Image 1: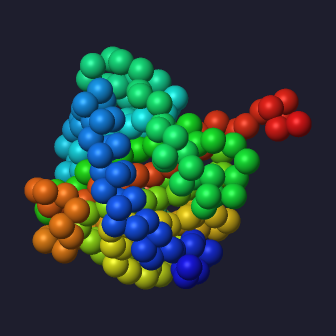
Image 2: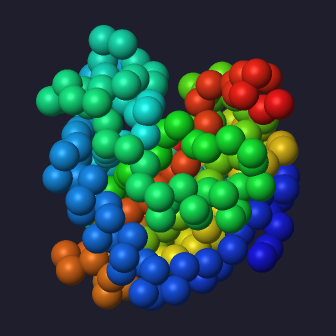
Length: 210
Ligand code: MD3
Ligand code: FE
């Protein structure tokens, strides 16, 4: 485990190859009932290059009219998101050290040309809970900054099977995916990168934690 600036924790090789293969199969099952959709930027409606879907009680979506938000249903087919599979919940329990289940598992798919600009994750009500990220497939160059857009940034390469846990100050650090390194993994038949981002969205009620 390596500690990055602002306290983010990086676990290179967290998942074995076999666990990665099983997780890809699990993601394929989720995508069958919740197909990837094309996220659009708020106000401009410009398409993002990443394709997305979710599982969990709340899924992260974005479109021109209503912007970034969490909702209980798929933006295209209107169906409730599939549950977060137990194998994914176990990853959260093992590495988050947080006593409540995640509500959202955002699944991002990057083709070889996709990227994600520098941003903060601030659409959640609960910033106390960590964010857990799992990378599968091609490697990427990931950039992490500070809690202001103009802060210094550090870039590092995330590989298939790596986990990152964002706690403390890193929870609100600016971050983005600068580029995908094509053909750096044999995990996905047609290449590209999958990232799973597990998040708590709502503040847990005290009544459920006693
Ligand atoms: C912050 N996804 O969906 S996961 C997102 O690879 C998003 O698809 C990225 O940012 C992706 O909002 C990254 C979250 C993550 C990972 C490592 C970080 C955020 C980080 C390290 C420091 C600060
Ligand atoms: Fe993010």
